[in-house]
Length: 143
Length: 143
DNA sequence: ATCAATAATGAAAATGAATTGCAATTTCAT
DNA sequence: ATGAAATTGCAATTCATTTTCATTATTGAT
Ligand SMILES: [Zn+2]
Ligand SMILES: [Zn+2]
Ligand SMILES: [Zn+2]
Ligand SMILES: [Zn+2]
Image (cartoon, rainbow over all chains, first blue to last red; front, top):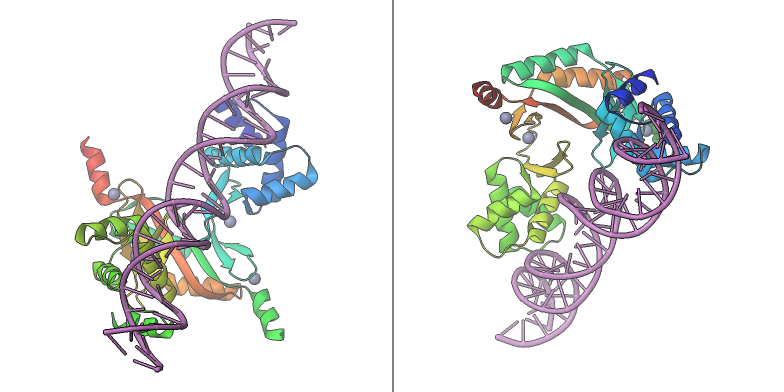
């Protein structure tokens, strides 16, 4: 990832094949991971990378702004790659864990209005809709 | 609280003056508390109530649907009394911790539309705007 | 009032994810 | 190649949450 290289210089980091592997894998995957999920996934593809290293790589990406960190109510942090100014919110299936991303300009605008009304200077927000996804609803019906 | 008494019966609970005190205090306070905050607050008004008891009372209220539980990104659960069908969302000041509640019907409607589009059956949602509140912005300017 | 059954309580221990300390290893500019 | 500095693995620590368990309190029945 070119942008990670940029940050690497900026923060005086040294390169490491392990971290590179983690970063590449994560950025390419383009989906959400807990530290443990990413650790387990990476373990399948390359031996000898510890949990700590995965953890620190994700933290680093989050600090660099290349990864977003969020907790969907279960006290476990989840990370996802941030392409570049691609904001989105989440639909989370309580049954199967599926995470769907969406973006709604009108909602964003209305949020802005609300913040303005209270004199708030908003730097971030999160909108999460919890429920049951279409597939899980179907499964349930068939039973 | 009448509704708590109802649930007490339903769940085969016995009454206890300590728990009653906690529940009353919490429901009347009408604001957000972490377990520790409520514990400390209650300690000022009545001796001999342990952290465990406060913790369990809050959990119970949450199970009964009389308290809402949420985590505002700092990995600490916060509880707030739920009057009855009073949904609202939050503005959270990252500097002073102030929590402001708001409700916006248009946003709620748009959320509903989004869920529908993806075939999601939504049971809950959370919308949190993080930033700096009006007061903190003023303080900062004066410095 | 007494008794048994069961819930509530407090204090300590257990949990579980996040985070850190540290010695060993690797990177990299010189 | 050398040394300063970063990276890594593993164990240890942190910190809120949750559970355990011995003790106490509540409730209904006798
Ligand atoms: Zn699902
Ligand atoms: Zn996402
Ligand atoms: Zn503030
Ligand atoms: Zn609230």
